[in-house]
Structure formats: C-alpha cells, structure tokens
Image (tube, rainbow, N blue to C red; front, top):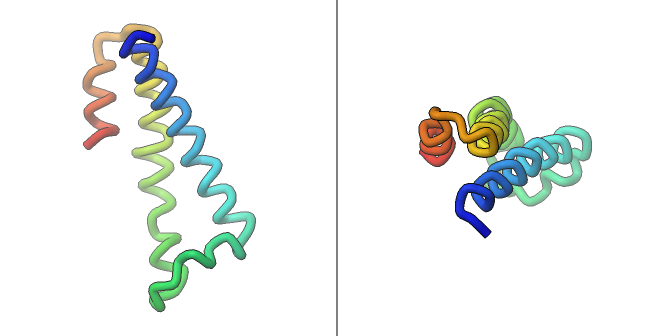
Length: 82
C-alpha cells in the first residue's frame, strides 16, 4: 500500500472517529465516567470545539487533499499533525 493512500485512509478514519467520540460524549453522559480528575466535566467538555474544528475537520480536509493530490495536501497534513 502506498504512503499517500495509507495517510488518506488514516486521516479519514481519524476525522470520523473524533466526530463519533464527541457524539458519544455529548449524547451519553455516562460515558464521561472515565474523567475522574475532580475538576468536573466542564474541563473535559471545553475541548470539543478545537477537537472538532482542528482535528476532525482538519483530518477530513487533509484526507481529501491527499486523495485529490492537491498542492496544499502537505500543508494540511502538517497543520493537523501540529
């Protein structure tokens, strides 16, 4: 399997996985039980926007740019990795 194809699949799965993860956390509050730092759920839930915008959407955009062999694919990949 070629590197570009593997990276495309990876970023697509990562983006969809992040969206599903936050969906589970929002719609099933009992799933937040793993977060036991004593600070409350508001700290955990404060990460939803950057995770969805930068990681989920960024990963899906990077996957699309890699798949289409766009000239900005490398920049998108480094943006998500960073």
